[in-house]
Length: 199
Image 1 (tube, rainbow, N blue to C red):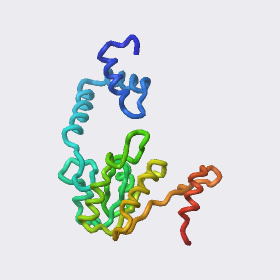
Image 2 (image 1 turned 180 degrees about the vertical axis):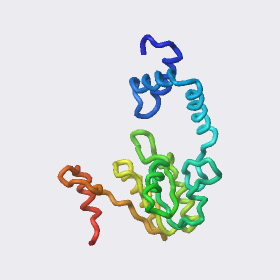
Image 3 (image 1 turned 180 degrees about the horizontal axis):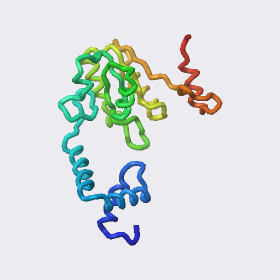
Image 4 (image 1 turned 30 degrees about the vertical axis):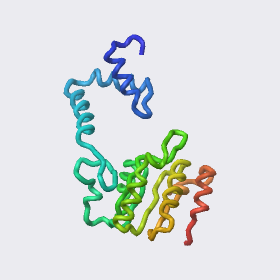
């Protein structure tokens, strides 16, 4: 960043704080903003402030919303007795875009990662338990990521719900549609065999 004026340096530093944005990408973005029209720069700044001012967590499922409740929780046609548990809002959106689920959701806002200091108290697990009890939920679908943290979180949820009158399932993991088995990693193949189904 040597040679840039202080305002540009500050902008690069701020942009570098975004996940996946290194100093080089942040520099390109900062220079793009610098060369943008005043109107475009103002629109960018306003959209950032708008998100901070207007977006909050849905009090039911903890998805991001501008309204009192999110669109899913406000929809009376959804199956309120079925909850799909996801780690982050972007997973909820991906499942919604698939059009394959008509129940409701619960966003944990993370996964267990003890080495990073993220334990059960950092996730929306107590809220999930309270919701299941209060609403006599019949089915929980655990859709955490198929990695170490996601598996640990799924196991903890299953353990928390053991003995309750609720059906618990985990999303299947395995070979993607159109995939080639010889290029599939060992872990994915192992999970594919573990979660095989009768045909």
